[in-house]
Image (spheres, rainbow, N blue to C red):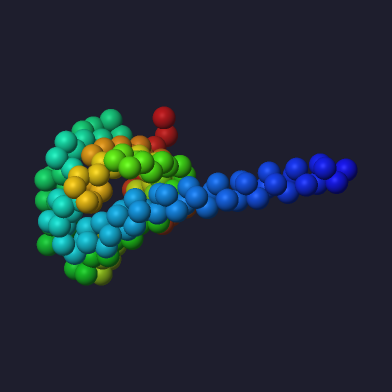
Length: 167
């Protein structure tokens, strides 16, 4: 009986240590994404420095260009008063190597403004692949797939059925 208890305790401790090691390894990538979140709605032109030269961005089934994303943020900043962007992100999985790494994240992005009429929420599962270029990590693949946001109630959002399509 003591042997089973000891074996069980060792197993649980190894899982805790392994999960903490994963978190420590992928924290560098999560911190890069957090920095990007902080400047997306204030200085979108600085986003270019976070991406690598062979970048591929895929949103659902469409390929996107980084330049167009920067222009869209700049347009939002000019169209809306006191824009505020928030991203809630949870790392689901990841790997950190010497030259290449990735994180798989569940994220909810929320854009609001004092204009009051816009409230855009996007719930996605995203894969970010990083490559070390010189001494810094750069994103070379961003692939996000939209999910329905079940936190939105039909009466709270005029675009409820856009956010939660019925297939």
